[in-house]
Image (cartoon, rainbow, N blue to C red; front, side, top):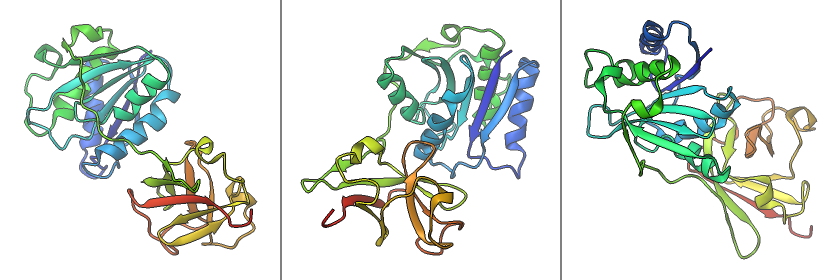
Length: 271
């Protein structure tokens, strides 16, 4: 049984998300298709890279992840397919796979990329504006039906990458990162990992500053907080990154963080 996931910025009002299923089932009717998200912020390649990397590797080995966040559709950017360790990906060559590629490098997985330049694996008619339906979904379906990656196109040695998020440590020991992603609750997922602030006194000996607001100490989980609704709290998200949340709220009442906003963790004076 072959598994395929779909990640796009199409939304769900127009039907563009659903037609990808149809394009796949015409070629691979036995495939199991899962929608990861169709609500990536439009044209936000970096957000898509985070969401896909945060989700794809929980799927069974050999799953095919079709990613269509493609502001360059119809231009000379390449469509590509890749194997990164145990998973396959079909996407535009615009950096959307950067986080997954970075993970593969850190895990010492082997990788393989091809330019999708063999039209026999696309739909018969390819429009200039809907490669998700006409090219990416069919290629994903052919992979699911047993076509080998190397048969889909020409080998690619230098896929496009984009700058990823990270954190930096200052001379005073404070660590500064950035907001990567705002979830549907308004929580801010920030680019700081536990080992990057391990030198600071935890959990009560730190303060977290975001958008001018300061949070003293961290909690283990939402239910552990002794604070009232809409009070800012900091904790470790299931993605592994620092999370700033409005306790039992839905975000935006206390602060309104945006991706790219700076977040700093420092030792509380005297701790």
